[in-house]
Length: 203
Length: 128
Image (cartoon, rainbow over all chains, first blue to last red; front, side):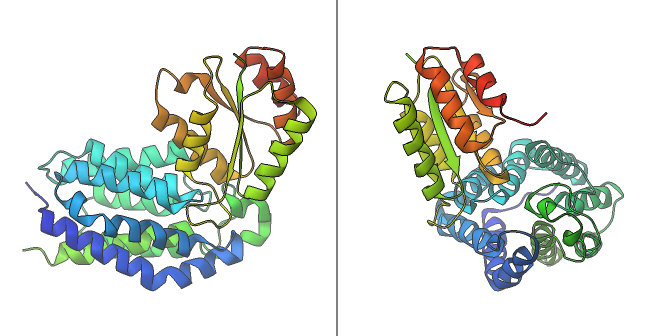
């Protein structure tokens, strides 16, 4: 059984916030190509707000902390990504017991992905963050290692480049959306790589 | 009490302008609120602002919400979930163009129509 301590949670949030800040310009650049050019700034505002609230959040049990972090993201990210990324963390918190094994985490992760799909009224293959979340879910179910899952997430984000967008702002561009990586997919892959490098350092 | 109308745009200027048109064309019989802009004032929408707008026009008859693009709809759905039952099921996002929809919905609402017919009137404008 795994139990993520409050220090682990702190370290994870801090690392995610700093990775988002370091990549904000790149994410915004991706969004400028096929969206409205604010994704990096939006994500940075959201994760900064979560990091600013870290003392309150880390005092809660992990599921509650995840829920509160998700709620904060919904309220502060703005754009369509706020409800999507926020729903992921809120659902993860709702479904994850305080102590969990791999099967328990996989189940909670799957429910969180399903909630994001329902929120966005979307499915895999539409050039969205789901195109990274679903392959991550499959990798979890296949028993892949944490490092492998992060690699798969990165590859899945790359694989959104040739997809024709049929959901979200990029879908307005039709065929011109082809040839650009989806910014939401890039964000999820980034967060996955941060989480993976943290978890790999665990004894 | 008449159905309330909320206008949610990515742009505060669009939302306010649409609200001005409703006021001028329909009058003051309808509770009306608008919001636009993301949490830091740029183009976008904010769940908190939408929640506050809905609360400010809350009517037992319900509230019809008019939105522009994608995130406005997703954020409005989120706001409605946060408001929760029993009110949530009396708040409906109209599948209608934001300006025309707001005016048609408000016109219908000003005559005391039920939420379902306010929404249906706005949605008549949508392409099938």
